[in-house]
Image 1 (tube, helix red, strand yellow):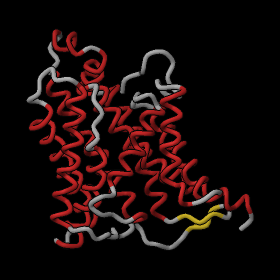
Image 2 (tube, rainbow, N blue to C red; image 1 turned 90 degrees about the vertical axis):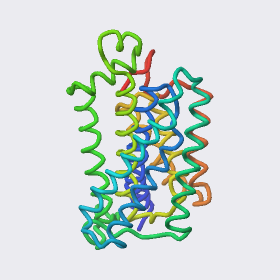
Image 3 (spheres, rainbow, N blue to C red; image 1 turned 180 degrees about the vertical axis):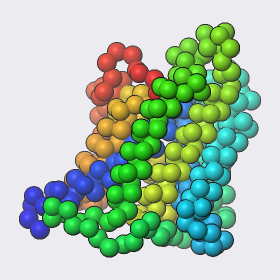
Image 4 (cartoon, rainbow, N blue to C red; image 1 turned 30 degrees about the vertical axis):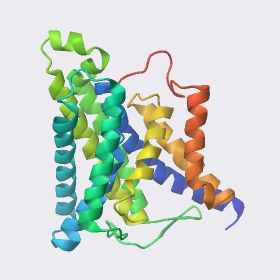
Length: 294
């Protein structure tokens, strides 16, 4: 491989991981727009997606597609239950208190996962084999194409849901003005519940499609969640194309930094980007004026 092929390899690998960050970032943005809080438990739903799929497929011997379906379903139910038990009872609570509660929820979910599955690292089978595919001199696994395809489907579905469905439009209305929404008959509590459920499902999906490449364990959600948060910040918490672009930027820069400088800086790069955005343009790179909600 010459330098140009190396750089292409880093870029394609970065786009793959960046797509995961984008999906996780969409989950952060959806909850933020509905509740004005940052859900730091989001990364744990990424972990649950991979671990639950592994449990259903390897331990219970269910088919991989059915295991994926059950994993997303259970993770979504856990997210909805978390909102009903931890967020919903605290009416008009300070957002900082709710953020602290999400951190506590993250610790609780991670601790339960450690008790159930231990501290070992597990490998989820690839969806369609492990024969590498050569593309313009760069090598990609078939799972990378699953990541690109599923991410694209999620982005399109996210757009259609929030702009062309009754529930999605109600959630957008609540993100702009919760009082006015309630006055016209929108159940604000239900929209918050839906936001947690959708966010949990997105996190689980991201965890499932990345697990065959990076493996999974009880604590993988911490770093993935923080990088997804970085993508959401870059996108201005809009939940739109800005968050997707933010995830891709983080993924590509992270991959280039690890390949051209040192793999030891791989995780640090995302947080350097986050700090720079917060200092120089806290409203996000792709926002003009007010943030465009979901």
